[in-house]
Amino acid sequence: MMRATLTRGQSTPEGTFGTLALDGGPVLHTTELPWRDNATGASCIPPGVYRCEIVNSPRFGRVYEVRDVPGRSNILIHAANFGGDRSQGWYTELQGCIAPARSLGVLANPQGHPQRCGMSSRAALGDVMDWAAGLPFELEVVA
Image (cartoon, rainbow, N blue to C red):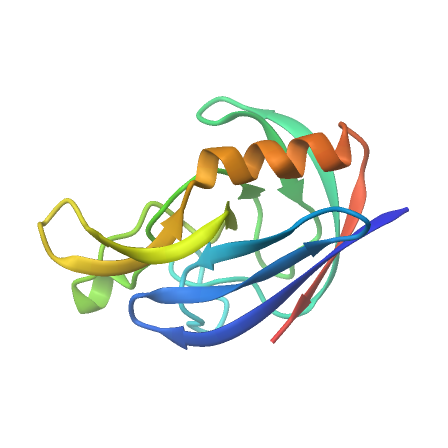
């Protein structure tokens, strides 16, 4: 089975940013919510090894779902730029999901404040989809 490894960097109120190495494929960046003890809708998922399978999301279309996350469901790999902590005033487009990106940078969020974020997320999601070709894969999340 193919394997992808998400290696996280520092978790900050602006988001958790890491790298996503696709076995035999490109190395991308990731944006996730900050670690908040695996709280639903407010935290990235815990480190571990998860099975990812293709699903048809009503909101995001054909994407991968990260399965069997303890205490969580509907964790998707989908396009998004921002993953900040709402409780600390940062903007997010995530509820616990993983957003691939081709690079990291700073953009003005919808409130007009500069915020660290993932860039070219739709293109990076296309990279993931092309690499996996609809087949299941394992995702190892390393803190």
